[in-house]
Image (cartoon, rainbow, N blue to C red; front, side, top):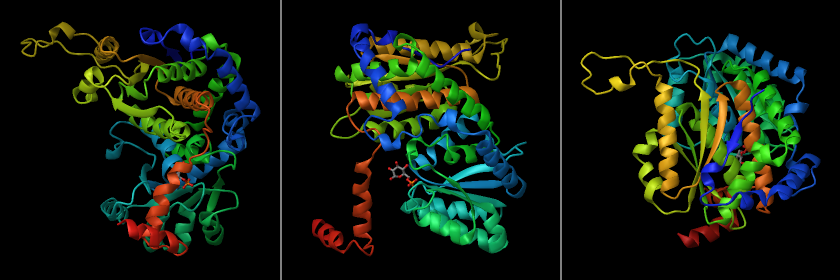
Length: 446
Ligand SMILES: O=P(O)(O)OC[C@H]1O[C@H](O)[C@H](O)[C@@H](O)[C@@H]1O
């Protein structure tokens, strides 16, 4: 059986193998601490054995709910922010037809997203198209009190009730939240919505393999059992594999070795635009987990070859504080051959008969060599194919590596105290009841 692979050879001009392998014992110890729940933030490590713990009944319940929604709606709006939507969007966009929004021949509901911004224009335009469509809502918030999704839900709930009546709206709204706490739980109980629980010990950014990710992924028509199977395969592989061959431990070790050499920015690069939102998910995972106590690698991302025509200049010749991690998909899902042209005015006949992917792979290799020559160490993650199984492997690989990497950095990878600062200022400025003191103080600063 093939797995996700990690190679660090193109970093060895900048960091020695010994400097990476120096983290061998430590990373193995941290992996054990994650499994046993003995490290920092250990009340939030429920995600570690999610793939092996999730039951067939739970998956069947999610699939049945997705099926009943599919009968009723042509659009499902997933309302959530941060960890409450990024995982679903990452997987749905990676697996969807690139032109899914045109909805050609798609028998599954189109999944749209709201509650990730407070843009009046976004919400206006969303409601403008929804008013003429059969839609449902999946509202997701672990705390049940986050402002952005709460505003979007208030608006869309009202629109749905207007469109189909309160009774039918109730059948089309699913709430995913804490088992007992928060405003969303209270509302869901009062209104009688179908609900799913986000386990207490799983934080938002590690929740893609709970109903938070799985329900919207199932509604979009993807195979959640295969996704979980892939994650489980990586869970078992991570436990059973020695450091030297263990992709997650090697990734955690290599990025920390590079960080120690002053490489404070990691750029995640892909050569398939379907992975764009996997990078968005990854940025939250690593940014919120490691960026604290004035430490941490700054996670950035690019889509190649598009961004080689924009950010490529900086990566090649800008400040040398970056390293690059490339996700490469070994085998595309389709075949397109470059045709012969008798006039050859574009001079491309030398490529005639070859696959597009062969060109893409040479772009990848050429870029890697150029960036290494330019002073940018490269790590490479190879996925055998873009499908549910290997996405499951990839997500779990990044999660477990993130836990280990955060422990190497000696932070609690499972909290995010820094995100409260903007919220408290926003509430003070909006004069939320209970924030009178803060309002007074902030007004003095204006
Ligand atoms: O699911 P929720 O409680 O609504 O939280 C949604 C997101 O917002 C918070 O501010 C955190 O920074 C994220 O870690 C979280 O995923």
